[in-house]
Image (cartoon, rainbow, N blue to C red; front, side, top):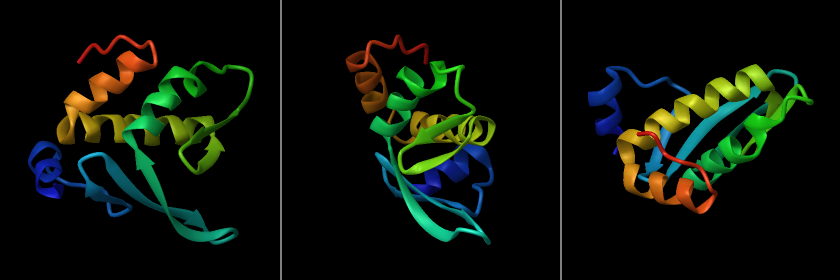
Length: 105
């Protein structure tokens, strides 16, 4: 699976691992809180775009088990969306339609 991303992107960030075509593992954290692995699924990304990305009141957003500043989470959600477009576009489209989003890809 990771080979598909290498072919499409040219280089995959070190913190991003492909578990399977519907799940990514993000190695993230900080010196303060420590580092851990976070599982991000297609459903998490669709949920983010259906609910979290529309919230302009809070500066804090959530993607799967990762909570943080909206700018960093938004960047990570975009990266995961692009990865799932390469890995499993059919399921991504299906999940978008289930949540009432109109996929334009």
